[in-house]
Image (cartoon, rainbow, N blue to C red; front, side, top):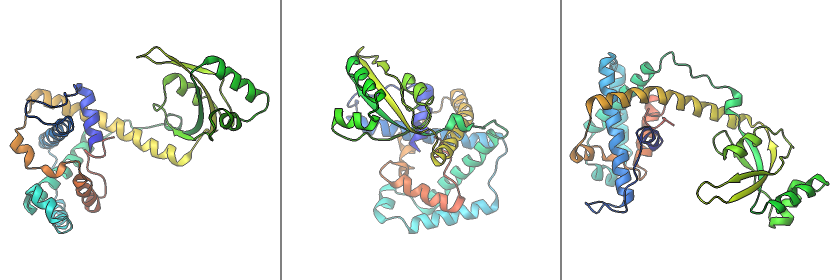
Length: 287
């Protein structure tokens, strides 16, 4: 769920709070409050967009929502239910909101181009040798070129075996990523230099490609990218609508849906939701 919030906040810009605010809330409490508040706002806006697009729950979905709520109530510990102050009717209402949001997102993204190429999603495995002195990097590269394996040079210099890192695009610094994805299995790079923006310090790297294509991780990343593209489409409409309405929620309204707190309750709630509706709740799967 918070993956959606991260994306939503980044779209509008986030100012991190100080350690405590005027109400003496910790930074963690402030972030949690703001994130949950934004999610509730997004959920309510999706209800409005459902009405605009004539999206309704079927009788079957309403019955299933009641069954889902009942199951949740029966399989949730008493402390959680007490802390949430939620009854079966409130839980049913929240489930219906998520189902309606899910259907609305499907309408808003219908016909969108969500195609992702394997190369765009490709996952690879690399080993990385990092140096703080350029001369040491070139000396190590020369050793490898003279016949010593990358792994042995790494072991000799760092007294440990190199780790394999599974990566996809966007997970490395740009200069390293460009080199990493140009390598084939068993190939090694030249010395690649990168400068830290904050300190201005230079670091020097040698990359070794263990595997230039990992099928299962590539397929999983393909789904992640599709979901991200889908999220960008419907989130744009939510943000636009929020701007039109200037929506604000009072704290007392937020407290009526406290089962969205990130102490494990939301994971339990959406696990039950998925059992009855076959897919993650829309705001949780927006990653």
